[in-house]
Image 1 (cartoon, rainbow, N blue to C red):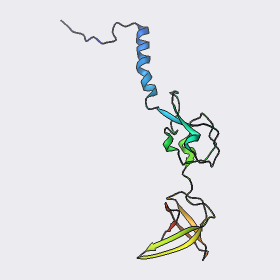
Image 2 (image 1 turned 135 degrees about the vertical axis):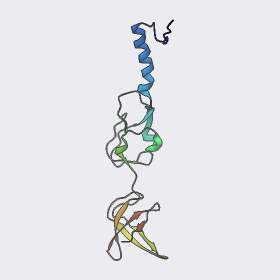
Image 3 (image 1 turned 90 degrees about the horizontal axis):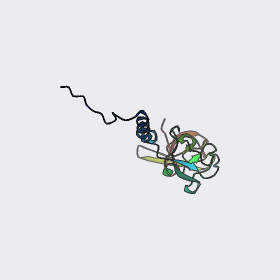
Length: 160
């Protein structure tokens, strides 16, 4: 006597198997899709994103490429680098942090080392976000130094 294992789909018609296959595949097609953030109106480069200018929508297109923002909290306070159209997903690459210091505006320079702290005023030579390493001109001496942008908007001067 031989036993052959019976499988749950044995005995089903070909059409029933196709429908069963589609039903099983549907959750996989939408797995991990979740939500996407889209603009409510046209947003132009340089604009800061606010909660009122975006909304979260459910992703229903299984062919949608990744690389888009999925949660509103990820975009709040970010600045756009290109035009964003209403109803279209927002690419992560189209956003940047807002500038902590702006080119040409006076900022404090701080040098500290070996128990010594020196402060002066400087002018950044470029826009920068917190943590960026930039060049700054000392207003009093005209010397160009480099440093890191700190959270309080000052520049911590690097030692050569």
